[in-house]
Every structure is written in structure tokens, then in C-alpha cells.
Image 1 (cartoon, one colour):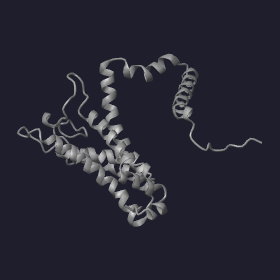
Image 2 (cartoon, rainbow, N blue to C red):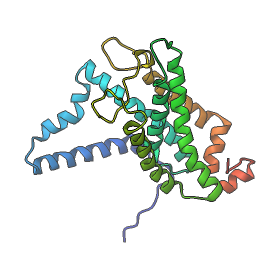
Image 3 (cartoon, rainbow, N blue to C red):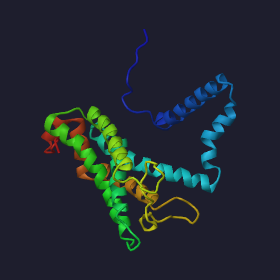
Image 4 (cartoon, rainbow, N blue to C red):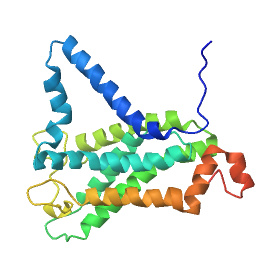
Length: 243
């Protein structure tokens, strides 16, 4: 009789082989689906894997779209490492954008470049505050963070909708749900001429490096992970699992 057993330790080969195998299976299933739909599989794979990297402009657009996803992933990595199942990153991102946009709307023709750091800080604090609602409800009332964080995504979307349909609506926007255009001074500095890539990309990469140091080279990061995986062991070691 066949029996599946967990390996005593991770296979070195499959540490790298598993992602490649998953990619190969994904490509194979994609080819079969394209063929079943009567589409050209080669062209389909080209759109997914070649078009985003075929030119400097394409690489720049890829970096623009990847930057907020990387920042979101860093925040979620902290949650998941501490065994907190936060699935409300979209809502936290939206409220962070709302807070940053609110500061940007305060700018006028006389505003100086100091507004850019203020916008960045507002975005961080907005996302933190929205995530803090989930943390507070879990800590005080033992509410399920999966449900709370997920439901807050819809609330965040409604908050954004209220603002762009209401108080922040551009009176010259032909009734579209949007704010007035932000002043040029509020825009993040570009890395390259002719590209939309901003300083957000190096900031996100720096954040990834700092998060690695925090999680794997600092006592606080170790305590966070132990507190999530084994609260009793954390308390025995003198760590606050609640914190």
C-alpha cells in the first residue's frame, strides 16, 4: 500500500525545482486551454512572457505595476510570518492611496517639493491605520482577521467611491468620478527621462532588503515569528505573543 510521508528535511533540488515545475505545468495547461479555444498557443504565451520585457518601455511599465505589488507583498510577509492571515491588502492599499491623495489635493501652485515626503508618509499611515482596525478587533475581541480584513476591502472601496463621487469630485471633470488633477509638484520624481518609473521602485527594493534584515537578523523579527508559530514557546522565552 502506498503511503505519503513528509520528508525529514527539505530537498535541495526541489527548493529551486518546485517553482520551475509549477511554471512548466502552468505553461502546459495554458497551451492546452489556448488550443481548446482555437487560439494560437505560441502567440498567447508570447503575450504573457515576451511582450512585458521586449523593450525598455515595456520593462518600465512592468516595473511601474510591480512596485505597489512588491510593497503590498512586504507587508503581507510580516503578517504571514507572524501567523496572522491578513487578506485585506487591497483595502489597505486603497485607503493608503486615499490618504496620500488627500494630501496631494492640498497642494497648489506655491507648494514646494516637501509635499512629496508628506504624501508618502500619509500613504503609509493610511494603510497602517486601516490594517490596525483588523489588528485591534482581533486583539480586543478575538475577531477572525481573515473575515475582518476581507470585509474591510469592500468598505475601503466604498470610502473611495464616496469621495470621488462626492466631496473630491472634480467640478470640471465632465461628471466622471475622479478628483481634480494633482499638481505637478506632487508627483514622485522619475528615475529615467521618458519613463514612468519613479523612486518608488528603489524604495520598494530597499524595503525588501530591510525586511529580510528585520525578520532574519534581528531579535524583534525572530520574536515576531516565534510568537505567531508557537505562542506558548514565545511566552516561555519571554516574548509577548500578543504584541
